[in-house]
Image (cartoon, rainbow, N blue to C red; front, side):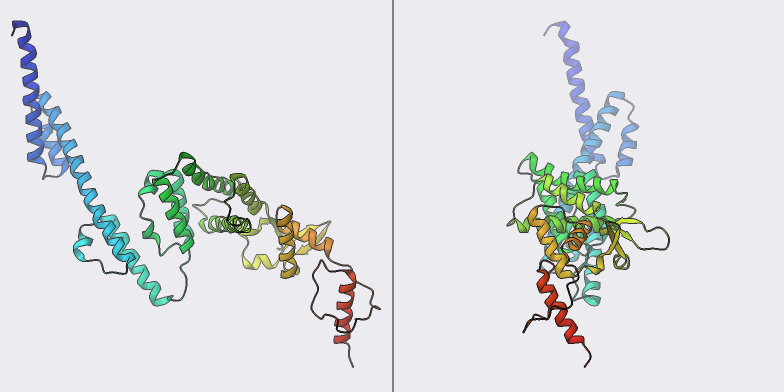
Length: 361
């Protein structure tokens, strides 16, 4: 070995000794809280050894934390599996769970017991605030959503909503392709954007946001079912999103009648809601249910948007005018109200039959 190489060899040996020192130091401190470990490392006088010791302490602590988290997750998975199977969770399993998960599990069991006692025969209804929080997490904190325990919300979500969130989480965890995950996020982002445009803040008014989402989902599912279960395209879904928020009606109040999206109306407001057709007010409640459904089916078959305005326009256009009273009912004439698509003769016969039935002796 030449004289010129001696300093380099000594430097390598010194670094190796420092590394061994740091490893041994971190192992000796491992049982203490991280703050105490860092404080002890900071008191090492040799700058090089101090720096290596601090790095080793942090790395060692991170590995310990990871191992602990993996162990706690195993206990949590086992506990939730037992709950799903209707089994009692042993104290030893509860003790091994992460603190947050343990509290979630205990809250879930308490809520389930309360529901069984007070509402045993009622299906679980979705809590709009819980629904809104999960949507927000999925859109803005996808990594957190991937690790969220969806089962912990089972007492706050309807079975259909619970299944949807579980399916979305599974797709985000194990996407079959980039497009699959993007399409899931895009659906919710489109709805969120539509809510924002309509002035509905999901965090401040979760009930209204949930009403809108539920109605959109209902329409999308109905359309898909009508197509034999075929998935709708993004554009087809967007049409339903637009239709729900564009479907506005007037609400009869004192003073100026405001116009609101139908989906956001209360039952009391729906009774007084109306649309205008050629200057004529048409109350929603005046359109018979049978006629309404026939019009909706007809609009769908034609591929036209379904709205209260469209329903009222078709109803007034198809509604027969008063028939001449002199037309007598034929023998055995039907006494049930005809369809709005029935001929004028059928309506005349019906009205004549009603007059004869109500005539005084």
